[in-house]
Image 1 (cartoon, each protein chain N blue to C red):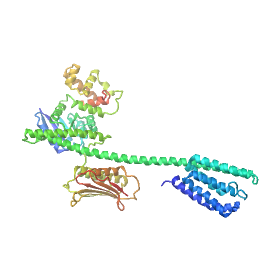
Image 2 (cartoon, chains in turn orange, green):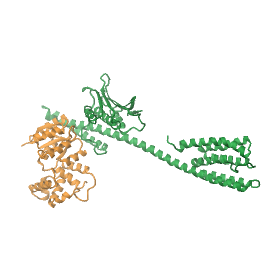
Image 3 (cartoon, rainbow over the protein chains, first blue to last red):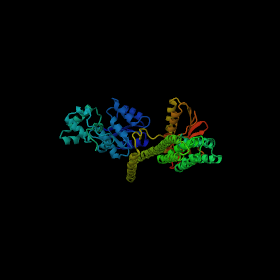
Image 4 (cartoon, each protein chain N blue to C red):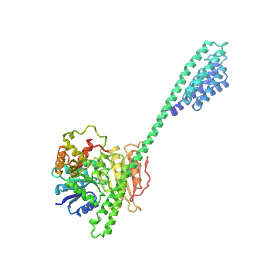
Length: 219
Length: 401
């Protein structure tokens, strides 16, 4: 079954271009495009795609607000959203990761990067562009690391904390399994338990939380 | 101009010298039997020390000592008035002491004080054979105490003036620094937005080139490779542009979650004004095919936004008239913006605000200019003229009072 994708951008050229590039892949299907956040929320509710590629800066309703509505709606909360941006240092990238985006993609990404991003996010087994994402989060999460760790982290078992550290380091489930000498299925179970306990949607939020709670320090 | 020593103080000193000049000669003639000619000469010499002290404190002190010595000699023989100091010369030299304290500082004031004391003592002692020493010494004591106070007062006034001057200088300097900072910040803001537009367009070029082989059927492999190279080059340029923007972005929240505005979006601004309940009359004379550049449209939007928010801040009850026009007969075309509101009271003087600087910088960035002020009697007007096609190097705008 192919992965269903929606492209949201206020520029006609970006919508048409990305739709053409993604449609060229056999396992990906573009089920619709929208020109602003309000249209996107509507379209996602109706078409229930697996992945949404969405611009941050849009008229009417901006991408972050549309993202909040999509992940806040029980009907569409399982939809993965990747934010499109012209600037990776944008503070809105961090805002959108906090708000529940699965990652972000620069608009000048190559065709291979674009398709790869959709596949990675749809599978949910790994973080999208791990090194870039971690760098951006490390740079944008401000203030010195707090000496006292987030109380939410106390709910985790030692093993779960080890797994969270590796997720925050951008490792995929398969890599974590190899690191800790565990079955990949066991890692999957740990990851989903961590996500439930900490109320995380995605690996991207796990990285943000790890930095913001002081579990991982930048640098 | 503020009331200070440098302005009001000098005038007061000169005014005080006039009556002293007028009364001295008659008093010397009546009280001390001085002949009219020498009395006038003494009066002029003593009083001249007052204005002299404003610029040349040492010379003035010397003149005061010599002239008062002359007065003491001339009046030494007898008469009913006070001696060694006659009343009018004493008052005059007291005034000189104050001014010398201000302009010459405590050293000159102290020297002048000691010189007059020594001179007065000498006269009192020398005149002992024919004048009552006790009376002379009482006159000396009176002079000593009054002159000390006058000198001290002058020195303190001088110190105070110096401090006030330093403070005023400091204020001027920091106001200038503040004004410069406002201009620089606004320029950075404008530069940021222009770079934003460029980066945005560059990313469109990348997407267009990248997706061309997928969108355009029948491209030869050579053409597809060519497109890919264009995409790569645009992508590299974009990376450089990101570096520039990181430098220009100095405070959070500057990149904005909404795209850079277009001229067509100004209707949102008009709606916002109307919703606030303020009267607004819009005369829109721009056709869709007027050919307004993207940067010019963005500049026009920001200028209108700033001008409207200024009116809302300063004259929330005034009806606003907005005129946006492109004159088709004008070659090469220009976009004119006029935002005006009736003035409730005359314009107050003051430095141009942040907003006015910002509008000027935005206009200049696309080669236009902004003027503002009472351009029409009784109306505050912000008037911008922008070329339809952006070009660098317009004038930075001016405030008309």
